[in-house]
Image (tube, rainbow, N blue to C red):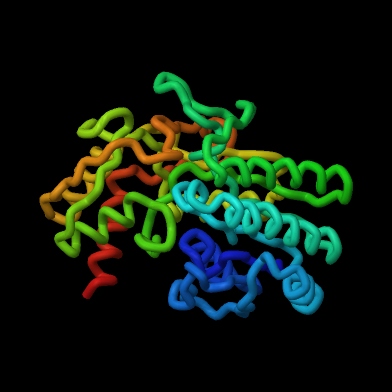
Length: 312
């Protein structure tokens, strides 16, 4: 397998790059390094500094390197940024993705894995329910709308050009190497601020002072293992990648505080525009193939240890 990973210097992408090289595969990275970091790639990979919006450059990379498989993780990944800059989000997450799909169709890529969002695409999920893959997407942010649009294009490219693909709808992914500044992720933000003895902002679910929004948190190493299965077995269609369990923002903070042995100074704020109150995903479909999910406590412990080590 010759695997090309867009966004391969980012949080999730770099875990995929390292693991696939360890498995003996040839791997190339496409990244514009706007948020991704070269230091995230800890194994020998061919690196192409390019923006997925640059169609000509992307086509040249595909033509010359000839990937057999593609993992598309390059994206504008912040809900709040998408609310502030919806046009930029759309150009990256829709037009940039179309450039990748066109390159896959033109240069005979065998299979594409597309990183989508389960944490945003379904809209509000009733607290007694879990969103399954057959739910109709109800985006409530430009980011989620762009990801839903890209998914529809994938279906069209499959029918029109025979492009084989898997869509992985990630829940809230956390773990080592997550950027507390350039990428969305409350776990990374809380770890960073607690280590530096800075106040942490806790955005409300409904009103200032409550426990915050409820999310489904999934460990990045579990995500990588699911991705590996999807790309090898060429899973067809859409899969939620999640634990199926909900955790409030305050509970997240408490677990991180325990792991770091730090008492937080909490700055309670009202609800943040674009945030969902509750998002929990049904993982029954993917759990037929993978069901060894890391517990949130163990994942937080490993993540906190990584952040502590990275600050030494």
